[in-house]
Amino acid sequence: MTKLYFIRHGKTEWNLEGRYQGANGDSPLLKESYTEISQLASFLAPNKFQHIYASPLRRARVTATTLQHELDELQGYPTPITISSRLKEFNLGIMEGMKFVDVEREYTDEVDAFRNHPDRYDPTKIKGETFQHLVKRMKPTILRICEKYPAKNDNVIIVSHGAALNALINSLLEVPLADLRKRGGLANTSTTVLASNDLGKSFELVDWNNTSYLKKRIDPTDVI
Image 1 (cartoon, rainbow, N blue to C red):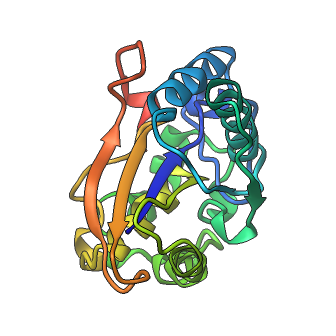
Image 2 (tube, rainbow, N blue to C red):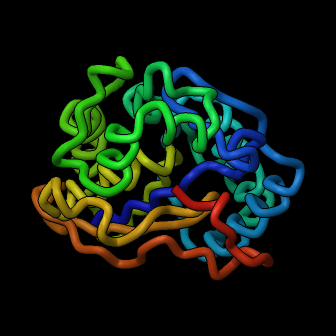
């Protein structure tokens, strides 16, 4: 049985400021995020991981490499890491770098659909990426991982982004597009676990948005 541990990257400056970070926008991790990644590593350390896959965007890449180092220290053996461009965040076009409040004022319909009605989301005006396109580019990577690591105790870490992971994970669970947001958002440095017994043909939800190991109270700027 393949177990996939989906990790949202650590909290960044733009997360704190309430700015959109997409496939082309980025900002550094906050200082405290490194402590939270260490807490994540302690939570994950009882498991042996075959591989770590990560988005190439700096916030996810640094989260993944920091986690890799922390796990190596705790477990005493290296976990290989691969950077995959297919694991990038949504391309949010001209919204990237803009504050949430400004985007809500200028692109009211687009923001409402993106957050609440994915089936109605049309990013033409903002020159962004659709939910359908995001899932189409991300899903093949997940299926290849399941095919590569099919054994009973194979565990794989995937470090990516909040909105992208939310859409991807729910699509793997065959949740209709209109209902993708009904489970709520994913917090920074959270863990969501899926399991597959059939090489990725179907998935079972094991854990959703687990932040129990983080020694802090989750606030609205942590979740997307």
